[in-house]
Image (cartoon, rainbow, N blue to C red):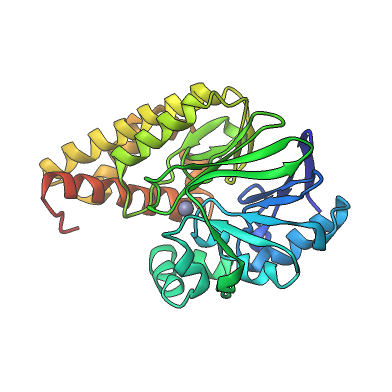
Length: 307
Ligand SMILES: [Zn+2]
């Protein structure tokens, strides 16, 4: 299995969902009160379980599965995973909780946004209501004086949380800080519709104020220089928004706006070939995220593009 110790008490798991490595991580916090951050999707729950076994954490010792938000790649597997974790509860934003308890609406809406990618992730199973802990703030006791602090970071979604751990000083930003493409050392936006720019920027301010030592990206892995990356991501989102607003004003097509973004954003220039050649990222970054920023611009300007 693909486990890597990346800090004290902290193990990164490459979930290899659908055979795609370096796409989705979960994290095991292996202290006295073990906690998982992100269940990942349904289809890679067996991989996560074997990783937990491999690092010697007992399934019955796990206290919480802390998910950043309810999108399938982060929490879709929570219901399935809990069947194997007899003592664990799921920490989730209260706005996301109903969709974990009853995923019947989440699945078709995910299928329509993600297309074939939703099949790679798999259909979510329900989480029993009595095993949900809704939170927007507060801390989780990890034992030995360590804790995990919940930080509400909406914008990417209205039900998004990040987590700060006290033992290494790093943050789990979920999708609030973009997608980190480690091979290229570049962050690209993760902003599917409906995307709320102002909330996303304010959430990034919150994370910057924590002065984290590292970012533990769900997509994908640990990155240093955290504060600079968060500030750079804010500028990148503003750049995408400016391009999209100009495009909507000029009645460009979504395709034309996509081409402008790829041409004007230095990060996109650097990873264009990589993203275009990646079956998942071409859908999530080049389609969904461009749609997210165009939707933002349309709402702001009160104009709708036809194509
Ligand atoms: Zn997401």
